[in-house]
Length: 99
Image (cartoon, rainbow, N blue to C red):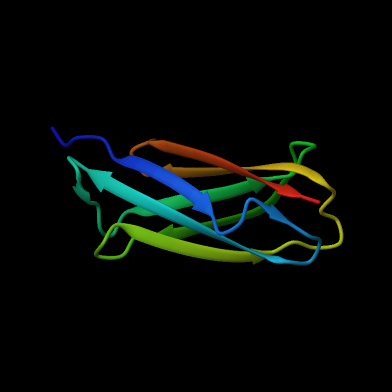
C-alpha cells in the first residue's frame, strides 16, 4: 500500500493589494521523498467563501509546483483561503490577506 502524500502550500507574500499577482507554491512528499508527477487541484476562496480561482497543476521531479493568478477588481479586502488537494485526497491549506 502506497503511503499518503504530505502536502504543504504557501504564497510568496502574506498580503497583497488589489490587482497584484499571487504565486502559490505547493510541495508534495511521500515517505519523506519528493513526490513527482502528482496532480494537484488548487482553489482560492474569497472571504465570502466564493471561489475566485481554480486550476490543476503537476509536481515536478522535486515534488514542487507553482501557479500564479492575478487578483481582480471583484476581489475584496480580507482573508483568502487556499486549498491544495492531491489525487489521494491529501490536503494543504494556507491563507493570505488582500488589503
